Amino acid sequence: MEIFIPQFVRTALDRLNECGYEGYIVGGCVRDSLLGKKPHDYDVCTNCTPDKMLEVFANFRTIETGLKHGTLTVLIEGEPVEITCYRSDGEYIGHRKPAQVTFESSLEEDLKRRDFTVNAMAYSPKEGLIDLYGGQGDLEKGIIKCVGEPEKRFDEDALRILRGLRFSSCLGFEIEEKTSKAILEQRELLKSISAERIASELKKLLCGKGARKILLDYREVIAVFIPELRESFDFRQNNPHHFLDVYGHICLSVENVRPQWQMRLTMLLHDIGKPRMHTVDENGISHFKKHQFEGAYMAEKILKRLRIDNASAKYIYELIWEHDNRIAATKKSVRRFMAQHDFDFVMDYLEVRRADTYAQSDYKRQEKLAELDHIAELAMEIKEDNECIHICDLDINGKDLIQMGFGGKDIGIGLELALNGVIDEKVENKKEELKGYIESNFKRQDKDNT
Image: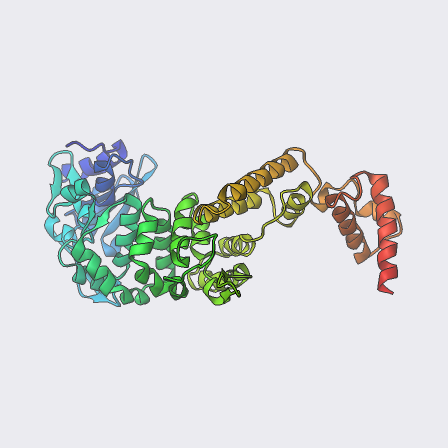
């Protein structure tokens, strides 16, 4: 089988060969090519030692930051190519990194240290595919399997536990039995991995087509770094709106939302507060009042622990806080909601609610979805008509209020009064009418406060 290699990568391989060295593309780019996908980047491995690499690529611009670990980045036709010397790893420290790296002359030594068979293949235009561990067969069978003994692979680098789940989710592959058993048995090793690394893998895992299955089958692995989820495992929802336990509902809702990590992480955490807010009425029906607020508080702590960036964490927090806010399908309610947030947030809020609804029972589902569609239509009308939802949209400004005799913080209070009046359809957004409305309502407010 011939694999397409871009010219800038071929130039790197040809240059190595011309100087008497081996050169192969390796790892993910080979895997993706065999799957018919376009690789995101290309890694090259070689028996050329780091010091000799500088000589081989002396006529190219190079980046030497990884040279002590055997990697030289070469810029060819403006594209970066990472070229790494064959290497073997010494004893690992803290289940993450080898204490020392030994540069090798054999491709076999390099491939046998890799994590999974599908990532342990190399290719060169001259020799074709080098597959020492059955990676191509595992690709065809749709299997994620460790190179060598799974226990050893995960003990060396515990992040491989999550990488295995991520590859399974993203590729839609099954995890081989021994590899799966080791993942579950050695899951506690993930506690030695940094939050940033965990979060990076989790984001990709959640966006995979097999995310729901992984979340269900390996829930105890996910609970190592989000232990709060364990409270939702097998927690029954004795309620006509639901047919799944809380965690089952969460996993289905993740699958229902678009594969964008902020949205999927929102769904993973959206009902995390339910078990803590559970009550049962006199008819034996379960209720979870105010679970969205408890869930938002819990999510805030979880996101901080996972070192999620502040902007994303705030957005996810707000979506969870609002996800059970059933705003009325009226122009006034939608306008006010848009004034509190913005159009894009409203669209995401509606998507969250749809994903939530599709993960519930059939009870009143069509009515719920129809109402969400109506809210979306109203939001689009408000946006298209440039309706007034912010102070800057008013046909009056601070200068006008100064001319009316307002000063200091009263200016802001007056403008806020005007905006609320327009949103609530008590006054038209016309300067003279707004002036009269502010005069009348501000005086009444002063009177009420005396």
